[in-house]
Image: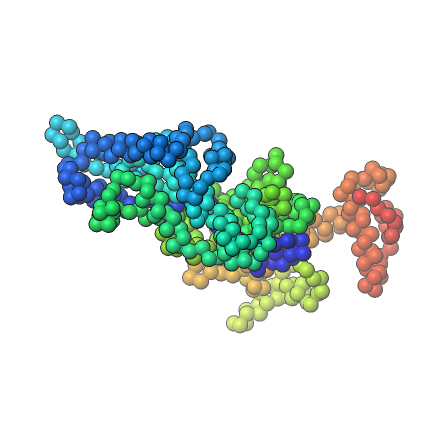
Amino acid sequence: MNAFYEHHKDSIRFGYRCFDRILLNGLIQPFQQPERVVGFFSSYRQFYPVSRDVLRGAAEQFHTWVKERADEWGTPIVEAPKGRRDEFVEPYFKGAKPDQVVVILKAREPARIMTAIGDRKTNRWHLQIAERWVVQYNFYVNDRRWGRMFVRMCPYLPFSARVCLNQHHWLANRLREEGIDFEQCSNAFLRCRAPERLQELADTLTTEDLSRCGRKWLARFTPFFSEAERRQSGCQHRLFFSQVEFCDNLIFYRRAALDKLGERLLDANRTIGQPNKITMIFGRKITKQHHGKLQTEIEDMHLPNPVIRSHYRNGFIKQYVRDHLILRTEAATNNVTDYGVNKAVENLPALRDKLAAINDNYLDIQQDILETFVDRGQLQNLAQPTHTPSGKRIPGLKLDNPRQLALMHALVRFAQIAAAGTFSTGEIHPHVTAALDPAVRPYSLASLRYDLSKLRAKGLVEKLPRSRRYRLLAKGYSVCLIFLKLFDRLCAPLTAGLLDPAPGGTVLPRQKLSLLDRLYQRLNAALDQLTRAVGLASSSINENKIPVGAPITA
C-alpha cells in the first residue's frame, strides 16, 4: 500500500484499482505481407494476379454484408457524431440484450489498407500496404461478459480492427453474478458492499478474458473468410495493446475532505520546481528522434476539478477528482513498449504490474507530510560529512546552500515521476543553472556532479547500474521537498520580516495587513510560544510584532 493511502485512510471509504479503457489492435498477421495475400487468393479463391478490382470487390462485399446484417438485427447505421461517441451511443444501450449489436457508427477514418498498383492492359500488379482515409464501421455491442464495448472494422484488406473494452463494465457483471450490491457511475464505483471482493475480482482479469472476447466478435465481423480458410490459412486476428489505462480509485467519505486535498495537490504542482510556471519540463533530453511530450500540465482550469497530467513519451499519468468523491490516479500509454512490455495481449500481467507501480510511485512522492515529528537525529546526520568504505570524505547537506537548493529544485519537478525519476547530469544541468541566482553562476557540470555526490552519499539519489543515469529515490524526494519548503516558504520570508521589514509595514494597522503577512505574524508568535514551551529563552519581542498570545485574525 502506498504512503498516500496510509496517510489519508481515515478519510477514505474504500479504494480499488483496475484497468479502465483497454484499446486493442486486431491484425491478421499473414495478410500484413503482400506475398501472403497473393498466395491466399491463388490457393483459396483461384485469383491471380490480385488486381485492384479484386481488392475493391472484397470491400464492396463487406459493405453489403453490414447493411444486410443491420437490417436483420434491427440495428441502425448512423453517421458518427463530431462530439464524444460514448455519450452519443448511451441511449442505444438502454434495455439491450446480451450479445446485442445496439448501433453501428459509420465514419471516415485513417486505416492501413492493401492497395494494388499496376497496369490493366498487361494485367500486371503488385500489392503494398498504404495508409488511406476510408469508411469504417464501429459496432457497439452489449457483450454477455464484458458489457458495453465496441469493435471498429475496416472493410478493406487486410481487415484491420480495434476492440475497445472497459474493465469497469466487466467488473459490474461479475458483481451482479455474485449478488454483491454496488453503485456504478459510468466507469467508476461509488459504493460497494464488499470492496475487498471487488479488488479480488479486478485482479482475476486474464489474457484469456481479453482474447476470448476479441476472437468472438472479430470472427463475426469478418465475413470474408470461411471457417475452413480460418483454420487452414491462419486468417484470424491477433490482438495487441494499442492504448491502456490503469486507474487507482480512492473513494472519500466527504467531498470537503477531497476538495481540500485536491487544492494541496494542485498547489504543489504549481509551486515546486519552477514557481512561475504551470507547465514543468521532464528531466529528459529531447532530440529529433523523440516523439511525444515531456511535461506536466494542469488542464481544464475552468472546471471545478482540474486535471493534473504528466506526459512521458507516448503515454501519461493523470490525476483528477471525479463524481465529487473519487480521487483517480490513472497511468496510461499509447505504446506499452515505453515501459519495457511487448504489445501482445499475453503480456497483460506484466503490464498490470508496470502501470500499478507507476501509480504507486506517483502517489508516494505526493505524500510529503510526515506522520511523526519526533526527531531521532536525522536532520543532524544529513548535515554531517559521510565517509565512504574507501575512506573518502563527502561533505553533508546544508539547508541554506544556494547550489544545493537549486539542484533540489531541478530534481523535484513534478513531471519526472512518469519517467521513473531517471535523469543524467547533462539533462538537469540547465535547470539547476536556471534556478541559481546569477551571482552564483557560472555553474559547471563538475560542480553539479560534486553536489549530486552529497545526495548519493546520504542515500537520497542512486546511480543506475551500468549507466550514466541517476534516480531520485522516494525518501530523497521528500527530503528535497522539506528543504525547499523550509527555506523558500518559512526561513527566508520570516528572516526578511524580522531583520529588514518593508518600510511602512510597521505602522500599518493590523486589519490592513495582507493575509499572508498576518499568517506570518501568527507563525512568528507561535514560534515564540514554542520556544518557551520547550524551555528555550525567548528573545525579546520586537515592538513591531504582535505580543505573544494576542489573537491574530487571518
